[in-house]
Length: 246
Image (cartoon, rainbow, N blue to C red; front, side):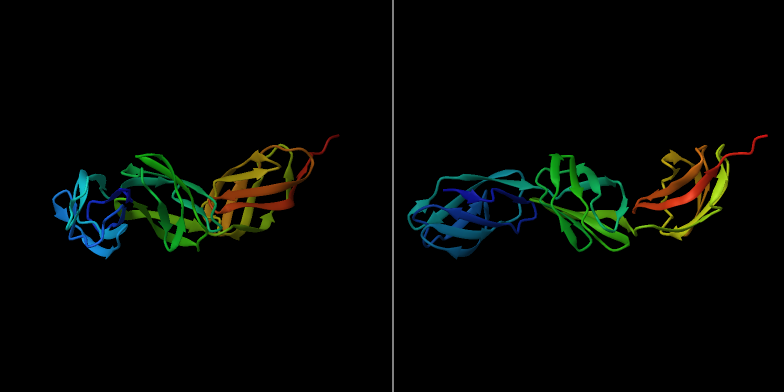
């Protein structure tokens, strides 16, 4: 007499299907000592809604012919989430997010606001999930397991950055030129490079970043700004100029 699923929330409410023979006219389905609500009954199938409970219990079916052999059912508590990392990512989605907590082993869904994603279970204390696409701003993150759904974490979607102006457009090959980068969605800037070489920088506002050029070789180079929302490239936007010689 199989039972599916064989686990559910301690709060009850799990729809459970029991299959077997001679099940018609069932008068009771018990989860341990507690009665379940029977919603449908045929000679081979009974569907019930589990009562609340804890731990492992035996499920039995009672008909006019007697009581069946017991089957195990496991009550699982709602998950507890300690935190997620990273807490921000691009609005286009695709960021791998790690969620730590307890009771995560049976996780089947992670919701980022109204958008759902299927997690990969690493252990009872950790799952990973690829964030779906969203709109810029913060959303609640909830995890659904066999024990229920829990929320309380926040993930922030960041818009894709733009880079419209690089001023000045040239400077010394020895570096040290102060350059102003103007664009949009630059608040979460984590790196600025000139020709692939990292530059020191400071975020002035969501539209302005100030950077100091590293040393470079003569010629035009790409300027790349990386944010939590993605990377943006200003092609050949800055030129290194060699100093004069006599």
